Length: 294
Image 1 (cartoon, rainbow, N blue to C red):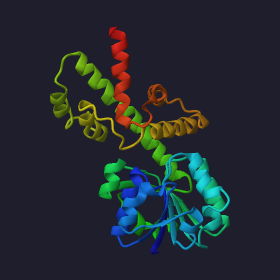
Image 2 (tube, helix red, strand yellow; image 1 turned 120 degrees about the vertical axis):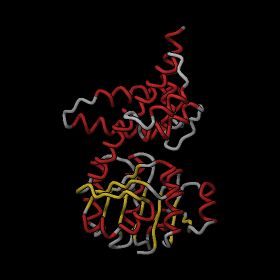
Image 3 (cartoon, rainbow, N blue to C red; image 1 turned 180 degrees about the horizontal axis):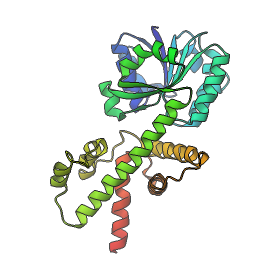
Image 4 (cartoon, rainbow, N blue to C red; image 1 turned 45 degrees about the horizontal axis):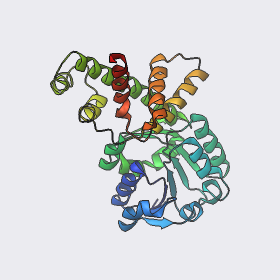
């Protein structure tokens, strides 16, 4: 396995492409706007004007695009991946998308002789840059083993979750955890600020105790600095939470924390904040508290 097609060269994708090239893979990329990927082209990635050209001679194809409709397009539209990839290629969707869509791709791909995996990631732009992503893989176990060199180039915590769609279910569970934890961080900081505490001292005090978490360590300092630049877009997190809530409802589950976090984020997005990072949830609490004080 040497030639890799890569579709979705965004915030996360660029770093993943770089790490794959560092590991010795030959990268072929497609992007709608060439100007946005000139940097990785300059570093050795081969640019193609169409998905068909990008994937036709690749041993494996990796996709990490924005939304389920984008996944549908790159796999199922005429002339795209399922029509164009090399016979026997490995098709790896690393987008966070619907488990049902992952199963649909797996079924269609298997019929055409492809090896299909759903392998969403977690770890944000920092993990993508460092090559330390957690990768949650669903599909055939032999295919998972065959693609391990690819995964090891991009991640450090790589685990097989089960059959097709299980990688996506694991990622949605991850997003449910983040929704609750980050909401807790924002509520705690809102409370502490209202009570006159020094927020930096508070973070230093609790980060090594029972309340410590990855979300607190990563986003606490950013929130205190009013740094809402995206490592992961709010609009994409909203998409993930909606997927999780849909799947939960299908199983008859009542996930109140997820539902409330999603409602809070949707309110922020409606105000034009969708391109901010997930830590911008703090703006919901700041705005709400200001309204109550008035």
